[in-house]
Length: 123
Image 1: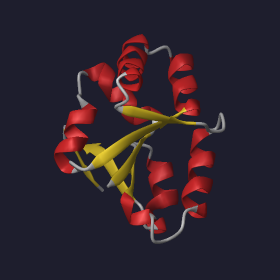
Image 2: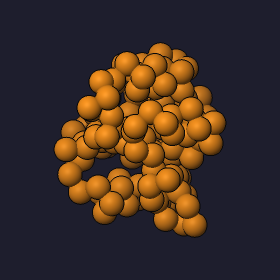
Image 3: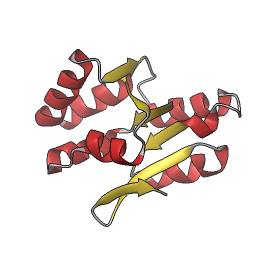
């Protein structure tokens, strides 16, 4: 089982009609989806009502799990990954298009997914 965490900039793809949940499931069929409270707050601040509607529906349907996080999600996420035991890291997937965040986490042993050439894939 893989734990798939969505960063804010990845969830914004929902606004562009990408069904990111289905696209990720095609690559990783055996997974659980996660979002943090900080990501939800960022989406509210950025004013993405359609994205929030989809996310709330997924949360209500128990398809998307919510984790408590700091307001500054990137820093919280880096700390969370670095505190994670090495043996668990290969089962953690971060979906993000944030180049700086990908660079910080690339050598930690977690998997990264991003949008590339109109498809979602591992980077």
